[in-house]
Every structure is written in C-alpha cells, then in structure tokens.
Length: 361
Image (cartoon, rainbow, N blue to C red):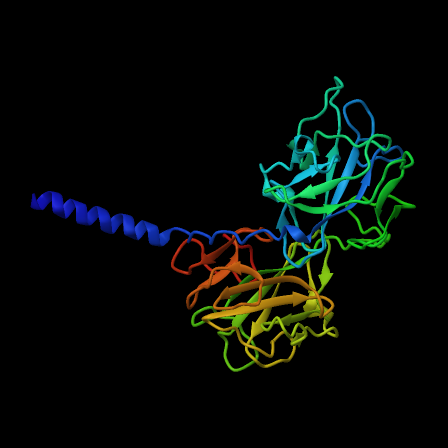
C-alpha cells in the first residue's frame, strides 16, 4: 500500500510541475460590442473593376461592415439579411475563423454576396481564401433594405432604401458610420467612403509589464527595470507613432504624448515594435506615469480623443479590452503579435516576456 501512495505522490508532483511549465490559459473573451458595427456600403451589381469576380466571370454583390467603436469586434454569429423582419431570410455570418470576421476599431469587413461557382451554383455561406461569403444576393429591383442583427437576432443597424440603385454604383454613408446615405461617386469596398486613403496596417498595444524586477530595459531614468508597454505595427509599411498619445487614465487620453521630433526613434518598421518605458520621467520614450501592479488601464490614441486600442487589467474599470493581470516579472500580451487572444507570459516557462520581439517565442 505504501508503494502505491508513494507512486501517487510522485505522479502528482510530476504533473503539477508540468502544469507550471505550460502557458497560462487566457481569460474568457469579453462580450462583443455589436452595437459598434454598422452597414457602411453595399452594391447590387458590381460591373467595372469588381471587388470579387465569381466562377462565372461576373462581379459579385457585396456588403461592407464598419466598426465605429474603439475595440475590435468579432461579428461571427451575427445575422445579415436583405429582408428585415423575416427571420427565415436571415443569414448567419460564419464563425469558423475569427481572423477573418474580427473587425478592428475603425476597420472594415467586406462580405461577398450571391457569388456563384463555375457551374452557376451559389457559393454557400462560409469563409474561403480569406474572404467571407454570404449566399444571399442583393437586388436593386427586389430589395429595399439590408440589416444586421446580434446572434440573438436583435437588430443593430439597417440601411436606407436602396431600391432602384444604378448598376455599377454603390450605396453608402457619405462619411463612415454617418447618418446620410447616398449613391456614391466611387465605390470604396474596404476603404473610407470619403475617398481618403486608409493607412496600411495599424498600431496596437501588444504586450506590457506592470511590475518588473528582472527584465533589463535601460530607461535613462531612475532604474533599468521599468514598467513597459510594447506597441506593434501590424502593417507592411513603416508607421511613425510620433505625436500619438498614451495614458493609464481613460478620462485623460492626452496624459502623455510621444515626441514627434525624434522620428529615428518613433518610426516603427513593418511588423516591428516600439517599447515605452513607464517610469514617470515624461521625456522621450519614457512616459510620465507608471503602471499599477494591481490593475490599470492603458489607452493608445492618435488624435487624443478616440482610443485606437485600449486594455484594462486587474482592478481597472476604464472599459478597455479586459486582459489578465500579470504578476511580478510576468507580462500580459497577445498570444501571437496582433492577435485578439491575450495571455500571461511567465519567465519560468518556455513562453517568457518578449519586449521588442515576437510574442510566444
């Protein structure tokens, strides 16, 4: 009997040790803010330079969704229709890959509608080759409105009447998420309706440490072990973060401004990183605040008004994306650079903090 007890104890110790070496499980994702999603533009017959050419060589219809909020929203499971009020005609947005159904703040998702394969059959609702397909087609003679709903079929947004829309023209809001609808001079699937050129890629909060005893980052300030925030460039072109704002107080979005006169330090390469040292110094890339170990908010804003990205951890109540609160010498970050899943990185495991390098290494 003693032998079996000893074996059980050894096994328990072995498995508990293995658990410590595993990457901590992420927190359950926060509720999606579906009310931030609007229908922004659509087309019923795409003729010249179509957004998507189907198997018959014809331009497919499409509906563009826009996220007017400050948090990324996964629209998977929402419903879209060209016949509001008739549930049998609702089409569920596929949920097979969040990478293609998650819309970043101020971002777009173009859903291809009514496309056909080479045999003339409608392509079923789903995700293929990185594109979202909805089996429903649009008609300028038979349809009047398009609408979207939460997964519980609560209406979120509905277009103005597009019946009689001219072939080859799109119907959209004159300003993204605005109240005025019109036949647009130029169709802009996946781009701002006002004709401005969207920036390729975006800057996001990628990782942070709020209690640092062992991660060496020379800060030119009180010590070389500061709290820190890592910013990541998701795009394929360099972006200058100079002039942007960072805060740990959501009521004060302009708390700290990144200098705009040191581009050699503030231009973030494509798929590159920038480290802000949160040591309270307030000069250069040293913020004028420190991060709270028990909880805090982190907000990133280009204009000092609207947050381009924000997170909240621990006891914070600022309303950013809820992420895990890391312990001393641990960091919290996206499991893969720019992804939507947040985890804790532990220096005692194969997944340590990675300031300035790829997460999850």
